[in-house]
Amino acid sequence: MRIHISERKKLLSLMLCSLPVLVFFFLILPPKVYGQETSTADLMKQVADLKIATDTVWVMFTAFLVFFMNLGFGMVESGLCRAKNTVNILSKNFIVFAVSSLAFWIVGWGLMFGDGNMIMGLKGLFFIGGADNSPAIGDAYSGVYSSISWTGVPLLAKFFFQLVFAGTAATIVSGAVAERIKFKSFIVFTFIIVGIMYPITGHWIWGGGWLAGLGMWDFAGSTVVHSVGGWAALAGILLLGPRIGKYRKDGGVNPIPGHNLTAATIGAFVLWFGWFGFNPGSTMAAAWGDIARIAVTTNSAAAAAAFSATIVSWIVLKKPDLTMILNGCLCGLVAITAPCAFVSVGSSVIIGLIAGVFAVFGVLFFDKLKLDDPVGALTVHLLNGVWGTLAVGLFAQDMIMPGTTGNGLLFGGGAKLLTAQFIGVVAVGAFTLGLGLIAWVIIKMFMGMRVTAEEELEGLDIGEHGETAYPDFVAATHSSETAS
Image (tube, rainbow, N blue to C red; front, side, top):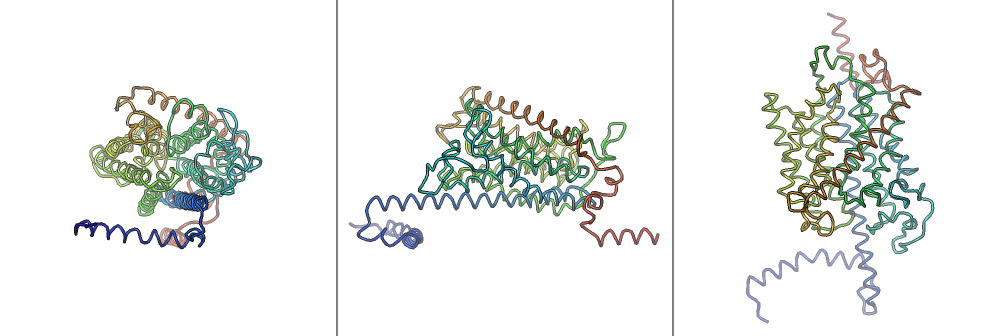
């Protein structure tokens, strides 16, 4: 057959591009697969195993990215707070994942994904029980976790991926209660939110619970992760009260600037990077088309939100405030987390632009209510978690991921999806805020929540940990004060 010269070039290019894949295929498969004695059944099994391996690598890689976001949260929170509390904030951001790991293994995983009823999982605590429904991948306990059986990766890959999400919800609380919370009280609350609060509402949406049955959708966690962390943080703020000197008697606000915007900026970049594991990784399979689309919608929303936050802060505050720009980007990332798989790139830009506006006015709104949030966690995670969840009901398009959400209100789907999203927001908010208040009250009664006024003024680094992040700076400052 005669081939045109341009077609020859295309064919040669295709062969060259395929060569690494073919080499990889023949290297990793046993010799019998491509030998003459290979049966069709053997070949199909090897192909199935290859897909499981590929999916598992993808899921674990994205889970590692989400784990890396702990560094981002630590940098953002410490940078936006005062130098005298740096050790305390970094300590909280470090211990939070350790406590989360234990709490989620002990009880959280089973409550969230274990088979049970429409409210919570009742099986699979400590990974106990269950039939071997997936012998090909050694998934020995899949029989009690049917709500997450839709992904074929091994059980422990599923667990680890969901664990890093649970840890994120607890980390959100850290920044909101910064500079006045007792370290031990925060540790206890971390166990409660990851072990009980987060998995119960997560079961409602991701574990086959009643909100999933109602038709609510949250692809990667605008509500499941971010709003839950935001509502729990709000409960803590309400009982803690503001930092000393934050609000004047006349209702005015005394700004308390962060000590290291370099660290905060690095942290924001780490979080932006980590979100490419957070959202695309929630496919829990190496589905290349979905991964690419979700990465682009995620990035577009973040970029649009950073841009709109810049413009709005420039207009409202008369200067392009860096903290608003950083939090604007994070607002866009939170907002697109629920709809990232269900909306077009154009819709993601609109979602992000609105999120960036919320980034500025949200901070001003919470300050007006005298809700002292040192890092803007309520604006980023609570306000934009709600917005992102509702955005599914507005912007979802059935043609993007057929058989899931259907069309949102703005694409001819009516109000059905938006109503389900709204009910989910209200239900999760009421449960988490209510249980969060109860948990904080109990902690306050038995352990106390807030450090003493003297400790707060001196800094939690010395009072809570007996060390400082910048000892040379402190020594130099004291020396200059003594000399003067």
